[in-house]
Length: 183
Image (cartoon, rainbow, N blue to C red; front, side, top):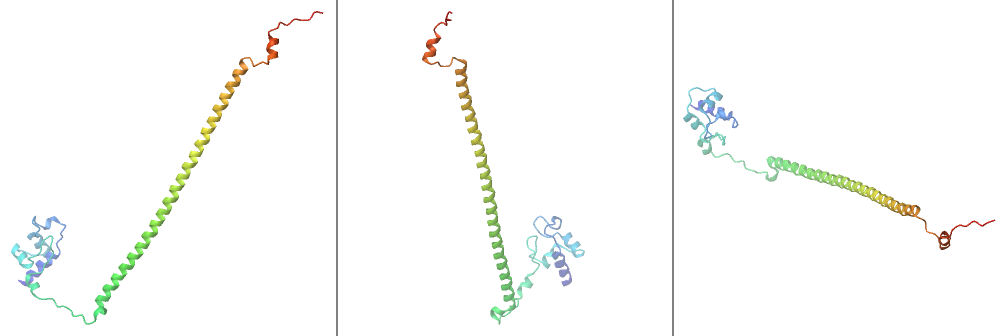
């Protein structure tokens, strides 16, 4: 019977939590799926429960209560912080800390570059707009100058079409008849 339990536990270890065809609606393994994965015949749900009572779709623990009755051997640390496992864990931690510091420095460098490029491009954009405003001011002043020349021309035209102003002597002589002296 111990051989059956081992085969069932092996089959449960092969089950895929993402495959809906291997599980019942309540999260228990389907008997047919366990039988197929373990190449077993004539097993029952009771056999699966006896082999791994805690096992479900969300809990892949195949240990039994018998397994937990035994107290695990606890290694006694006589080396203190120089214990190889502690040293290895500390080195792994230090490696992650160094990588994190390097990541933060790279993040800062890229952020500074982004700020620099953004400021450069935004300032260039503002200068382009300032140039456009200057062009528009020149066009406006040119239009005002043209309008002033047209107004000045209209005034001069009125003077030319009308009689130009005359001096008082010319005005007095204008009213006289011209008589030719007789000879």
